[in-house]
Image (cartoon, rainbow, N blue to C red; front, side):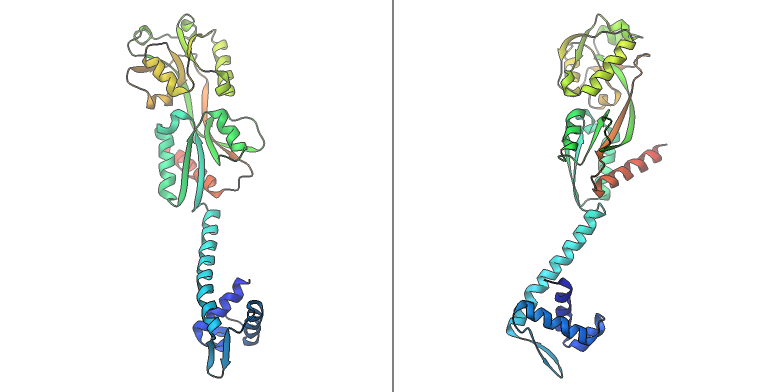
Length: 297
């Protein structure tokens, strides 16, 4: 069914004559008459009776006019929706965020700003570690992710949202809190809380290399599945750990952090998405991130 032809039919009915409708469109009257004939042929019945004073709907024409009017309204809405999705104004954005960043001000501010500017875009946020986020983005289960150390992959794009650093995290009542070390090597005999490499291999390996450069070998007595769990274990007095500084925004009471001079590995928190995504909502998120970053400088 030709929607333009349906629109011509609607205009003829509303104007009450082919001549008036032809001027409104605008279209030559013979061409409009031909379009109406083709429409009636397609429907298989007479829709309009013609006279010198104008046109009148047949009984079949009245039903067809009523039903196609609804169809055209829905079609126009569908076009607007498609255009708004293409412009990033409507639709859905499925975003991954590393566990502890859900309440970090830089990230919550970014998401709140996106929500304010694009309220018609449904924002679904999944809390995942970096490695699972990358795999979910590749499988198109996530549109984008906020994570550390994305892989060198030509199919992925990234943008740096925030530069963070590492801190030593201890219980507020521990000896280390009262006498924090100046170098990592001073922690060689301390009970250390760590995480399994399988959770996020790239982050794990970079940390191990940083530890080796500082002559530090962690004495692991407890493992946590994510940063939140590790913080809770530290708060319970089960040892110390090393975490990104921004995770302290969600730290429980009784936990403190310390800067150490040779714990100097930079942590770039990246927005990552598929190169062939084509999703405008992702681009809108990037634009907001860039504007917020410029505004902070």
